[in-house]
Structures are given as structure tokens and as C-alpha cells.
Image 1 (cartoon, rainbow over the protein chains, first blue to last red):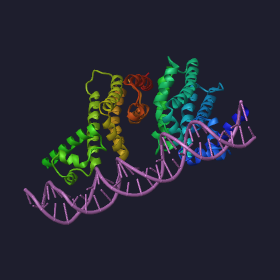
Image 2: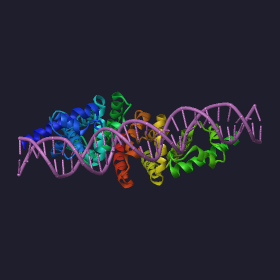
Image 3: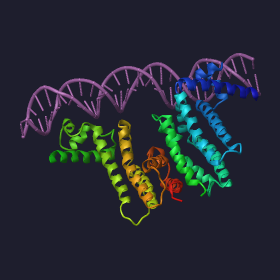
Image 4: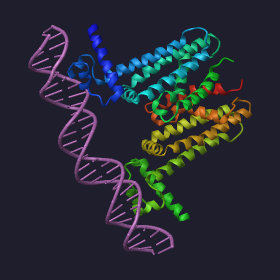
Amino acid sequence: MTALDATREQIIAAGRERFAHYGYAKTTMAELARDCDMSPGNLYRFFAGKLEIAEEICLRASLRTADELAQILSGSERSATERLHDFLFMDLRATFHALEEDEKIVEMAQIVTTQRPEFHNEGLLREREVLSKILEMGVQAGEFVVADPDMTAEMIQVATMKFSYPQLFTRLSLEKLERELQGVYEIISRGIRAL
Amino acid sequence: MTALDATREQIIAAGRERFAHYGYAKTTMAELARDCDMSPGNLYRFFAGKLEIAEEICLRASLRTADELAQILSGSERSATERLHDFLFMDLRATFHALEEDEKIVEMAQIVTTQRPEFHNEGLLREREVLSKILEMGVQAGEFVVADPDMTAEMIQVATMKFSYPQLFTRLSLEKLERELQGVYEIISRGIRAL
DNA sequence: ATATTGAACGATTGGTTGATTGTTCAAAGT
DNA sequence: ACTTTGAACAATCAACCAATCGTTCAATAT
């Protein structure tokens, strides 16, 4: 079993490298197989297909950023308002830098989300759970007035949608985006603040 | 001069019909010329090209919705908060219905905005001027606390971006969209309300 | 038995050719 | 002179074919 997992890891590593370097479309299963010293057919013992390899890579990236965002919850010295600010800006910077360092990653993400629409929703849900908890913290601390934290978290995601879709902010600099996010954050922040 | 304008109107009318019916790509300049009882070459005395015809059609539609939105400003019995609500929902319904009744219109709009990116920005600017005035009304009436209405209007447009790009809400029903917009509106509304 | 291969198959892509279309402009019409 | 035309030109599109690629599976190796 653990040997099987190790091979999966090897395939994922090869996929990450090639997808990032040459793009999803340009890398062939034969190349991935050669990287792993096996035949193309054998890859299918470890993954259902090419898309599933990309999906696994994207899933791990999504889990990693969700983990990073979840760290915002730890500690007790910072206010929920600060945490909300951190959450929104960390999210923007994460997607922006992913876009900047490897444009090929965006291609892969785009293919996965078009072929498996539920994938992106699951990622949003993972982030929303953190956001919900931030809101709940704020309610408990008397900072926020939010009747339904889960729903409000969803609304905040809708309102900050521009900063989550790389397709929407190509051409815009990080500075401009951060200025816009700051403006939106201030409205949201006041909008849920306890009086 | 007025004869020239009349011919322009005729071409625009023909363009509207064909673009809506068969789509921008599928209608040829030769067809538009035939509709107007002239030769293809003669169209170029009235418009610089095919794209400019579509641009003029889109511009007029944009001006019309801006006018409709501007009507929200008239009268004096309604609060600025209500006007803001109307503004956001009128905008959503306008774009949603345009999408629903003629999917070909979206194709045309998409081509115009990709070929002339500044076009869409100008449309946003026109709407933002109305939004700014609503905010100013609210400030004067003591309903809103907004330091820079123009900037806040821009931020509100960013926060409600999801409801302006048809590409983003295909698959979503008007009911679902209105529920989301209501949630975002409530946050924004509280976010700019005077205490 | 289980793991792996690599040839075979259908789907997709890349590239090329011919036709169509947007645009121009010299000639004809008014 | 000012309009209008329609043939000519270049750019784009559609249809086709060959090649490539993702995937499967009977055969082979371990």
C-alpha cells in the first residue's frame, strides 16, 4: 500500500514539474510515464486519467492555502477585524503570486474547474469555513453583529469575487488590487461591525 | 447631414436585427448592405467597419440603461438607501434579462468589450456617476457617512461585480442571484450607514 | 496472482487548402 | 463634385487529413 502511495507521489511530482513548466495541454502521459520510468498504460493503475493528476495537484494547493488561512484563527491577541483583514489580503496575495510566478498553473486550474465545476466550489467552501469562524469569533468578542455567520461568509466571498478569479484581474497590478480590496474591506468591516 | 444620419439609423436598425437574430459573427457586411439596399462598400461611408456598428448598438443600450438608472435620482420622497437598493437590483435585472431574451446580444457585447476594453469601462463610469449621486444624496440627508462618494461608488461596483458580468452567472437563476445581491446589499448598506 | 507493458483504438489536435468575409479603391453613376 | 458601386485584396474561417495523444487491454514479465 505504501509503495503504491509512493508511486502516486512520484507521478504527482512529475506532473507538478511538467504542468508548471510546459503547461497541462503540452505534457503527455507518455512523458509523465517516462519521468517515472514506467509505461503510459501503467499510470492508469494510480490515477483514473490525466485530469485526475492535475486535480490532485490543485486539490493539494487548495488544501495548503486553506491551511494557511486557518492559521489566522490561532492565537488570541488579535481582533476578529484584523483577522478578517488578513484573511482577505492573504487570499488575494496567494492567488496573485500563483498567477505571477507560473502562468501555466492558471491554465491547469482553469481546465480542472471547467471539467469539474464542483472542484472550485469545494475550495470556496473550505475557505468559507475559516471565514465563518472568524465571523463567529467577532460575534463572541462583541466586535461583529452577524445573524448567520455562514451566510455572511458567503456574501463576503461574493463581494470579494474580483480578487479570487485570476481571469478578472489580469492587467491589474497588485497595488491597484490591494487598494480596491482595502476599499471593499472597509465597507464590509463597517457593515458587520457592532455599534 | 440629416440624410446621412437617417442612413446610419437604417444600418443600425438592420444591424440590431441581424446581430440579435443570427449573432455578430454570422452576419455579413453584404447582408447588412442588402438590407439597406446598398453595396457593401458604401457601408464604410457611414461606419468605419463592422465592429463600429456593433459598438454603436452597444453604446446606445448602455446609454439607455444609464438613463433608466438616472431616473432613480428623481423624486424626493424616497430615501437614498432605497435608491441604492433600486440601483443595484435594476442593474442586475437589466443585464439578466438582456442575457435571457437574446443570448446573441451577449456575444456581441463580449466581442465589443474584448476588441475595445475601454468601452466597458466607460459604461461602468456612466453608471458610477449615478451611484455617486445616490451616495451624495445619502450624505446630505444624513443617511450615509461616505468620505469620498466617487471612490465608494467604485468600491460598490467592485463588490457587486458578480452581478454585472453575465459570464460569471450563467447557470445561476435570477432568484439565487437576487438573494445573493440582497445579502451583499445589506452589508454595503450597513457599511455606509450613518450611526 | 499481480504488476507491467506496449500495441491498438478512438478522440483530439495541428496544419494546410479552399472558400468566405471584411475592407479598400478605381471606376461609374448622379 | 459628390455618391455609389462592385471587383480586387488581404485576413479570417471551415473543412479536411494526418499526426498525436489519452486510454484500454490482451499479452508478457515478475
